[in-house]
Length: 364
Image (cartoon, rainbow, N blue to C red):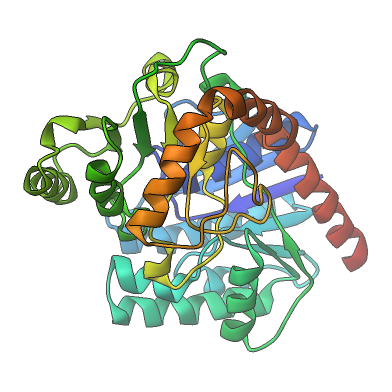
């Protein structure tokens, strides 16, 4: 199958959305498909056998406009069997230029209006929601990371399409090999700057979990990092908080190997969500770490190494942390085995391809 991905995302930066695009695209390619990705910037280490078409403009707005034009041009060149869209403002305009015979799959990974309002402004949220509505109405089918975001899509589009869950995954090579864990309780949170990451709640847990140390991986000089350091000082736990810059390769494997427990997003409620499929939690599990998270994951569910904790109460979360730490040695191997069996990007891509093939056959 010839698949064209269209996104205005800068794939040279880190983050779960970037890893998702690259993981699915590489999985499609490994399965023998012809894959092109239109993006604002190509990844620093491109996956094998995936072609990247860069549409960099002089500004974010111009990059978005150029991404749409480039996607149309690329579609005319390669005549894809399917266009896979990660919705971005303005993409509804370029989709209108595609032949009606080309199936379009729109992927939903968040409640766009709620997230944009938290991250930017009410006006930006209105624009993003209206743009998404155009895409969803043009799409042949929708893929969503949760039933919750698919339902939000139906409200935005004021219609419906065939809808399917899409799985997030992780790359096993990014995880460290099995080894002996430290007996010291070391908590790890990768990515902490967004409000819904809930890093403030992770810091607030430290006084409630005796001896625990917390490592945050992200932007060390950001205003959020400064606020978290200040908060830790007020709580008297500044010596137990460490903030490190983004890392990958051996440095990332070292961070994972040195941790006892991984922390997923703790504040999805701040963007009115109760369900999620965070990519970092899959990497934690692949590294043999139990995970603390207070949302429902439709793929992982409620398991000893990933308990479903629908609460933001610090006492409840601290109790779960202490229980996971007590049993980390027992549940860690099960977490790693589950991730390898169910959560790799290759498996996610193969399952998604079955869905996409059915969509293409239905259209034809």
